[in-house]
Length: 95
Image (cartoon, rainbow, N blue to C red; front, side, top):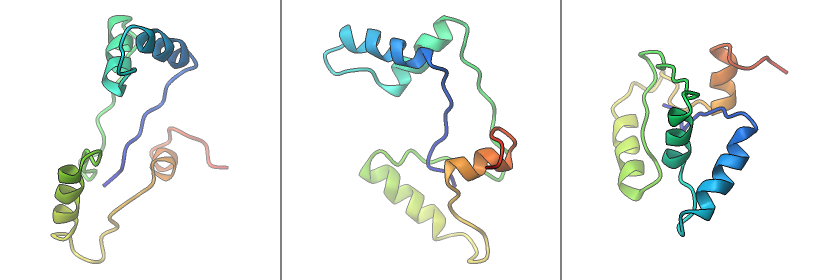
């Protein structure tokens, strides 16, 4: 299970500023992803089948993640931080 992973170029700063000026609530991650999609610059890669994604931004999302984690055998690693996962999958060089 991972908590989230995303990589953006420096253009994300200008995109977020532009979106924030036009939305009183600010720019959301979905807004930013849609902006990249409109520019044909959104690149998505499916995670390996052994990865599980939970939206933990809400109480119910966190509860779902906990319920799922409780069903796994104790020897299986549950949580991997995004940087370690990115290195293991070859997206980042090891330090």
